[in-house]
Image 1: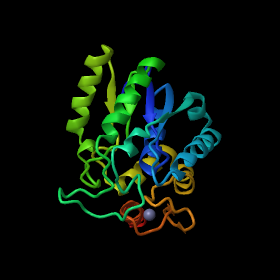
Image 2: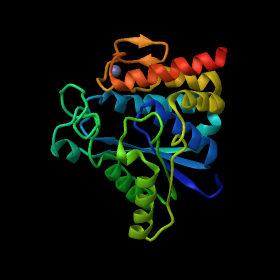
Image 3: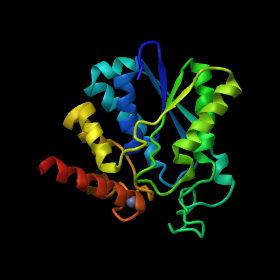
Image 4: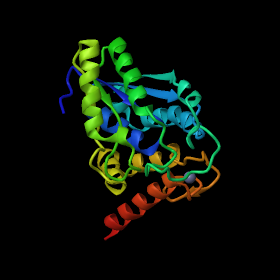
Length: 237
Ligand code: ZN
């Protein structure tokens, strides 16, 4: 990854994956800014986690802190007006007839990347960093690298500027994502991710597990817990 002269904008939701992406970007780029989207998600608590995580990262990793620029929060509430999904409305999480969980918000990543691309234009950034992942994911078609390649090409053409969409987690499973976090920032970063990030779809922060806060039962919690368990097994084996 080239670093000098590059400015990256990290799509930072406040969840585990985007937190690792933020650390990765701070290690690899000389200037980094963050963007978050309010789309009236049920787990809005993750938006509160964003600032706490940024602050903790700056305090514990001063070199990264010097590279970390402003945070941007954009309103993407139009997504919740398009129709009900389990991410934006209080409905049970289940599989649809298309084989996708109803946590899938159609067009969400496409919209986020378009908004982040416009922000990159304004902020003179040439890289977007996102935590999309093809391996452990729930089958979301907008997390596939093919989709992102097409959108990268559309953004470059539509804004007539060079722009890359970097996806450092694309081929990693959740255990490898924990391992990557450990490589980047050791146990200090692991502790920050456990304590300050949020993954649970239901927004539950009343229960604390080894791997962080959450209901422990929703698909997001299950994935995070399984990845943590596998990583711990590998570390202690
Ligand atoms: Zn949960």
